[in-house]
Image (cartoon, rainbow, N blue to C red; front, side, top):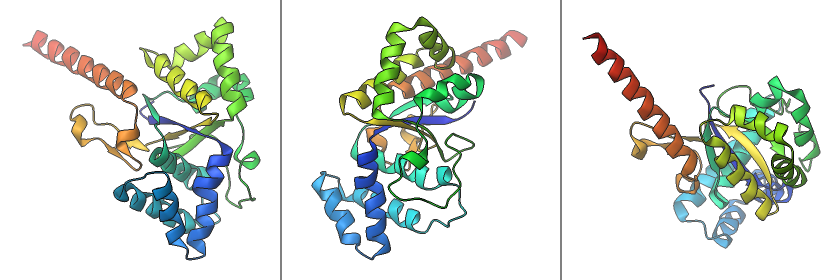
Length: 237
């Protein structure tokens, strides 16, 4: 899977405080409240403006737009203005549950999280780029961490998808969420690392809040692929 997947520790309460309530402020023309909230959390002016712009886009969402491609994605983006998030290349719970439906027990649907009922259709999984995926509630995060330690089958299944060292990044994301009493939301293309020129990496959120471990694994993997390709080409000459 060629997706840039990120994992965002955020609780339903924080979703309300950081996204759903500020969304109503935008709709009521009270943008100064958004900037005050950003200042309260020590957000730099540049990111406060990005936060405000994300909410402006969210406020313009049409009722027929897919929730996962709009509000869900924007929630992942705004989380990264407040707290660190984590990256793995091509590994997501959305892909795991396609192969192993029993893992749906760890996920909570948007219908159970949103403070008001949204008319937008909801898939509750990653279906394409720029899309939110599944959400693990705070209790489900704690349960999954416990099961990873105590149930070898769970750990084996996760390691099958989060391979080549990525399982450590997933554990780090889950542990960070558990430590802050948050759940974990996955999304695609919130951050897009450039493995060839890391300084050209981009993020809709705060790039500096992206944990580097998964990015380094991606860079190492691409470097290895390039070395193999060069070696094969040299072998032909």
